[in-house]
Length: 133
Picture 1 (tube, one colour):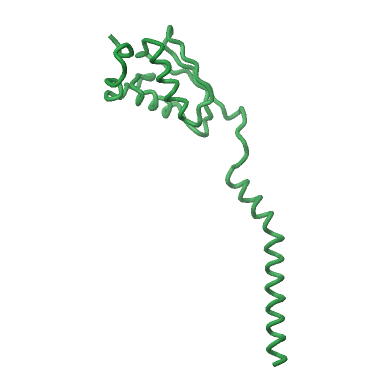
Picture 2 (cartoon, one colour; picture 1 turned 45 degrees about the vertical axis):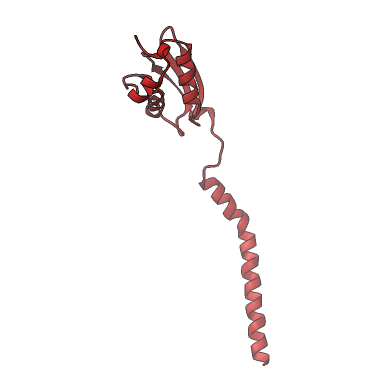
């Protein structure tokens, strides 16, 4: 019986040591996971500015529609649309979105973007004032 108790005590000690080592290593494991998930905030170096031609916009409603569509993309930082020259200047996080994705968003809203044509279904849903004459 003594040998049996000694085995149990030895096993308990080993389990305590394993648990102690686990708790000792846990902060380092969490730190590693935090870094691995790239949880660091984005910097201004990650922001890109681009100019997008909007040949099909005709009024203020057009600009609001495009702005609202682009704002839904989490990578978009700011939008400035000039109706007179039919261009948008968009600042965005290049790690979260891309120019082609922004063009697609504008196309799905019913407008041409650069050389990409508007989605026809979305275009015909636009108010009359927003359709090219």
